[in-house]
Length: 86
Picture (tube, rainbow, N blue to C red):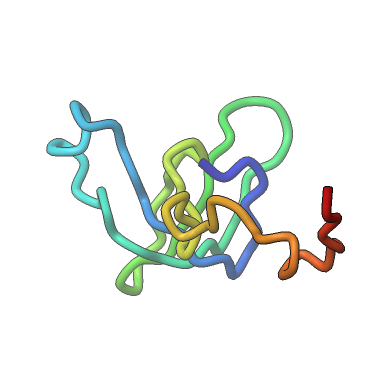
C-alpha cells in the first residue's frame, strides 16, 4: 500500500482476493495523475489506457517494490563494516 502517492509515480492496482474478480482494473499498471487532499476519502486518479480511474490509495502498490526482491541479509564486508576476529 502507498501512504503518500506522488504524481508521476507508476503504480499497480490491487484489491483483496474476494473483491478482485468484481474489479475491472485489478492488476493493471498506471501512472498517478492526481492525488486528493483534505478530510474525507483518500482517492488517487490513476491514468490507465488513456483514461483516469479513481482508486482508493489503499489499493495501490508501487511498481518495482516487492518483498521478495530485497536481500535477506547483507554480509558485513559489503556493508562496509570491519569483521572482528574473536
